[in-house]
Image (cartoon, rainbow, N blue to C red; front, side):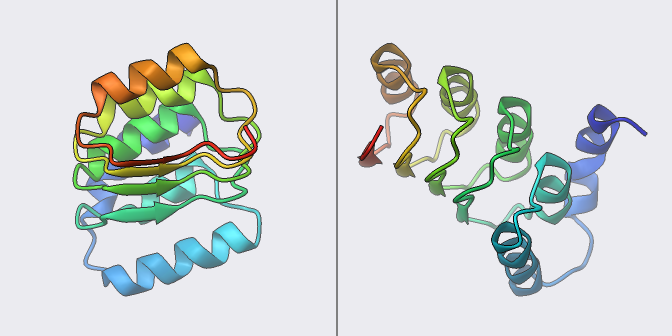
Amino acid sequence: EDGDGIMGEACALAMLPIPVALKERVLRELRLGGVLDDARLLLLADPSLTHVNLTNCRTITPAGLEALGTCCDHLERICLDWCFQVDDDHLDALGSTYPALRALSLRGCRHVTAPAVARLCRRCPRLEALDLSEC
């Protein structure tokens, strides 16, 4: 099955009766192991998540962020530090899908532009903290 099919089923799979603490632990281990991609992220997504740390996850795409936001509409904090692929398309995906976003860290994401950051800020009125260090 293709990647779009996996992402399309992700929200349904997120409802599996797996404890959130276990999902968070597996997400952390996959991230640290460098193998967390869109499909794995969405399979472990949970509607009750309020924060997600995707530091160094260099295969996360704008489509993956949009799908995650659809499944987890209560996400308030997202860390995308050192995700070198993050660009304006990723910020546009965040801006269109994360109404509850309060804090975003983009440390080391050097492909984002000032206009995309401005759009994100307009689209996420609850955003209180934005880390653009080393961008």
